[in-house]
Image (cartoon, rainbow, N blue to C red; front, side):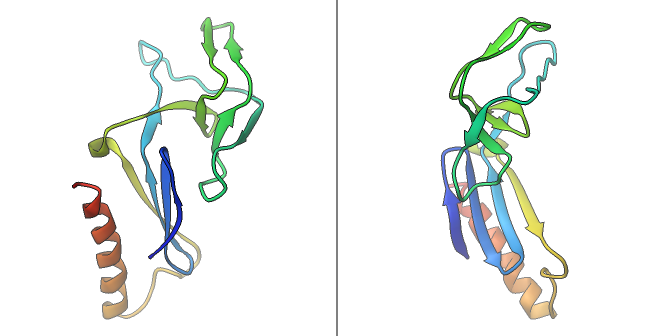
Length: 125
């Protein structure tokens, strides 16, 4: 398994060609009463080159007059939603594939799944 990115907010590993393990260490911020906000066309920059493209950093303050909420400069966004770090037991694990890349005989599939489980279980420690 090759490390593509290990950051505070997200880890990305290449299991094999066409198969990624993505670990999101965050969740959307709840601004009260199930108030989940999305920013429309904010000025952002990439969070980290190896992370998913939708993980961004806000370049300037963003004010939402309807909610009277200001999202601070430097806030991390995922798909336009401000996020916050969470404890390990709340991390979200994703297996991303392209085409038929997650295929093979029983030994190959078992090997790939065991590699993924080994990485996930190492985060429990």
